[in-house]
Image 1 (tube, one colour):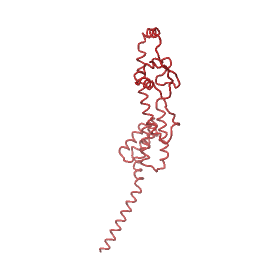
Image 2 (cartoon, helix red, strand yellow; image 1 turned 90 degrees about the horizontal axis):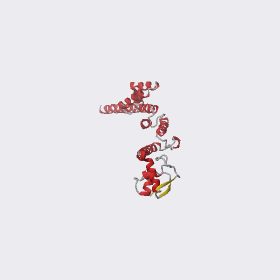
Image 3 (tube, one colour; image 1 turned 180 degrees about the vertical axis):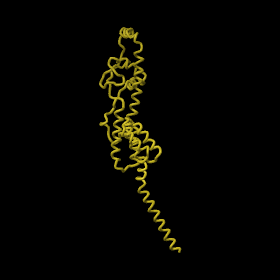
Image 4 (cartoon, one colour; image 1 turned 180 degrees about the horizontal axis):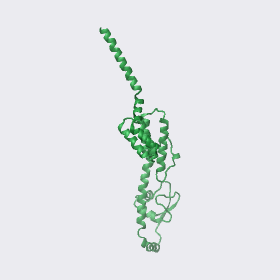
Length: 242
């Protein structure tokens, strides 16, 4: 009886192991089927076909919030963000799809979609600092973040120069008198300087005076030459007041 009981127990254990293995093999397929059958997911697809991208996106995001590992919803959300011209969240959802399904048949296509989203982001940056085709393909996302930070710095500098320009142009009614005074007192001594790449009024002020505070003086001394204080022309010769 003891031996018979041992054999029966072994058969039960083997059967359980086989059942578990079978469940693991179908786990991904089952989860995917459940996600595709989700009413919100199906509604999102319908909205997408009707070109109602925003409503479709809301459906896919709800699926992502309620279902763990909703890879297909991440993919569709990324597509909707591209349609809405919002590349950064699109990149996030495409990368989530690849993280969840790195070996899927669509993973190569999704990687290409990430590159498309990165180029779209580059095109949206004010001033177009780089053409999309000029950026490498291996570290585009890192380059995007660098460009974003640089763009914010440039915006702050342009804003500051614009404020300085307004202050310098404020006393319009006294411009004739001021001009007469400068002429009557004779020219001030100055030094010439040839503008180089990456020069700004601030950097030139630091170079000659050791401080940024005299960039307004440099600008005022060269108003007839400097048309845009935020874009100095390389090779231009300007006067540096003493």
